[in-house]
Structure formats: structure tokens, C-alpha cells
Image 1 (cartoon, rainbow over the protein chains, first blue to last red):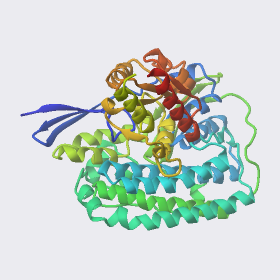
Image 2 (spheres, chains in turn brown, green):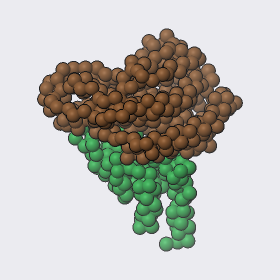
Image 3 (cartoon, rainbow over the protein chains, first blue to last red):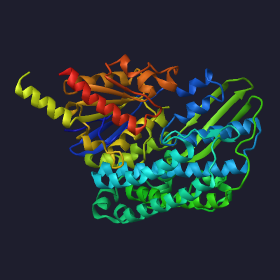
Image 4 (cartoon, chains in turn green, orange):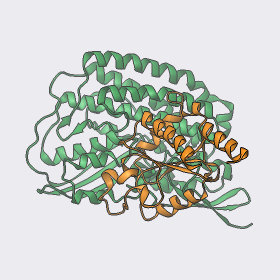
Length: 358
Length: 145
């Protein structure tokens, strides 16, 4: 039985998306893992040739439906830099609020799918029940549940009124209560620990060498958070990256769980400081020059390279998404594991294949 | 129609099993499908069970655009489904290619590869619309029997 190659995916019960892994196994032990791609590739960056720079906002929002708002935010920040406009202060705070709502719903989604990968279905249902409150907030404040479409070049399109702010805070308190009630199960349940502790370990140095980003890197003891650059209004808010040392699946779970509380705290801070003022500034002219912008998505650092030549269309748009950076680490994390642990470790990097392949 | 065939038909309509395949979507529709199965929308009250094996599935939910690489996967999944299978295409991308219809690696909607019975529009489709689509699919079983 030396070196049987087992295809994992592209259609697999634990994966909501088509990721394909060629697992070389000996008995039940994985000896090598090689990811294969291309099932979700759309060639989205090339659309910049036929959609003008304003229409591209709608396209980049659909790079990934889970972190769509932050994709649009990154893109708009890049173009604002090229066009030399500064979004109003209120818009920057509103961007933080919607970014953190996205992080909340993404992390709850991930925790749920992670529980489902372990076979803990009731926890999955409970987490997704809490998540629906966030989706309700998204719908009430932006008009859409998933793709918010709130960003424009030069600011935001939607506003929060006083009634919505109060309601948002009560809903957040309910979400916090729900999360805290489940916290003990997620963090210290015996079964969860057995499935996650010591599985898929990657050290800080190795994670850096693989180029990992976001919660993956923070769970390995490296304090890296792009929000510390202070884009949007993050510079005026008080927070510190959540860092864990173990580098295993449980550490990644702890990081994301702690970030739920951090996001709720950031939304409260932003709402408390929310200044009055305009939502957007008028933008004239066409972009020229090139720039690189970064933002922290729920999965880690997202990088946009934008090159414009003063025309209606961008010359080049390049998107590097966090999962693209995290997937290579799988080749080091999976060997040595039992086959039954593969789904858990695979999900622990929070794979977003539509981001990766664009 | 014999007694056994009628019994199987009735059983299928009262508890259809779902298979979900993401065919190149942005995840927006996929997370809405999963939201349908969770307590707030709860598609399971219609007897629907989400399965991972195409051979167990009566309804195939497809989201996203078709490209050169995943068209074979989609065709194989459709072939392996229990007959008569019903295909529900969810979201603008699965209908026509949506916002990506002009992208270089996109062939278009799901109906370029397999026959589609129910079309659910939206970008992304709302959970209510997806539930409506699945209920329409149950009606389609009656026509196919």
C-alpha cells in the first residue's frame, strides 16, 4: 500500500467550495499533499479591460462573497490614493463598522463550518443562528445581506441614523451573549480539544517562510495585523492583535474566537466616536499612476496592485488574497496526519477558494 | 404507475435529499444556501437533507459560472444523481454568467452543460428565494414521474 494517491475534492461534503487535494497516503497516514486549482477561476482581473474603474467596484465585490465589503474597501482606497481624494471622517468610521460586521459574520461562519467538519452539528447550527443577527444588521444598514455595496470612490453610499445605531448596539449585545454562552464549548470541550489540539501544527518561523497571513500567522505567535497600519479609521481606535503561540488547529480556533469579541468592541468604539459630516466627497478626473494597497480581511492580508494610465479603464489590476498565501502551508501541515483529520486541518486555514482563484 | 413507484414518488417529494455544488461562484450564494439549512430559515422542515454523495441526491443545487475545468465535474455529478433528478440553478452567475459573463474563463450559465429545471435569480439569491426554488423543484418531480 505504499503511496496510494487519494483525490480529496473537488466536490466534498466538508468543503462548500471546489478545492482539490491529491493526498498520498500510506495506510491511514498522509505522507504528501498537493493542492490543485482552477475550478473557480473566472479571469476576473481581466474584466478591468472592459469595465471602467467605477464599474470595477461591483466586480471586485464579487471576488469573494464572504469578505466582499473589504475587497471593495481596498479597491476604493487604492483609487482614492491615485485620484488624490480623502474620504470624509464619517465615511471612514462607517467603513470600519461594516468591515468589522463582515469579520464577525465571516468568523461565525468559519467557526460553524469548523464545528461541522468535526461532526459537531449542533454547534454549527447554534453559531449560524447567532450569525443571522449579523446578517439582519447588514440588511437593515446596507440593504443587502451578503454583498453590501456600500463603498464608492470617495466615501460610502449609506448612512446610519440614530435609531439604527441604538438597535445595532442592542443586537450586538445579544450576539455577544450568544457567543459567550457557546465559548466554553468551543474552547474547552473535551471532544473539540481531542480533534484540534496538536493537529496541523506550524511554527511561527515556518509560517512566515510560507508567507502565511492573518489568523493563521497570529495563531503561530507572530503578531501581524494590517489594521495596525491605521487605514479607514483604525488608527483612531484602540485594539491589539490577538496572538496565540501553539500554532495548531485549536490555537487558530482561539484566535478567531477572540477576534469576535474584538470586532464587537471595535464596532462599539467606532459608534461611540462616529462624527457627523458628509458621506462622500465628489470625485473628478481619471486615475493615473500605480499603487499598492493592503487591508486586513477576516482571513488575513489582502493586497491590491492598481495601475492606471489616465484612461477610463485600468491598465492592470492584481489581487492577492489571504487564502492564496495560506494554502502553501498545507503542504507542510497535512503530512503525518491521519486521513480523518484532513478535513479539520484543511478548514482550519479558513480556505476561500473563490478568493484564491478569482 | 405501480404501487411501488407511487410510494417512492411520494417518499421523494416528502423528503428530498440535496446536493450542493459550487461551480465557480463567489461564495455569496453558497453561504445563503447554508443559511437556508440552519435554524432561522430551516429548509429541513420540508424533509430536505443536505448530503455529500451525488448518488444519494434527488435535487442538485448549482451556484456560479461554468468554466472549462469544472464543466466535467458538473456533468459527472449530474450523471451520478438519483433519477429523476431535478437541477436548481441559483444566482445570477448560474443563470447566465452574471457579472462575470464576459470574463475570459467563463462559459456562461449552468444550462450550457446540464438541463436546468428551476432558475432562482438574485445576486446573491435570498434564502427565501432559494426555499421557493426548492419547493418548485418538488413540483417538478410530479411532472417527471
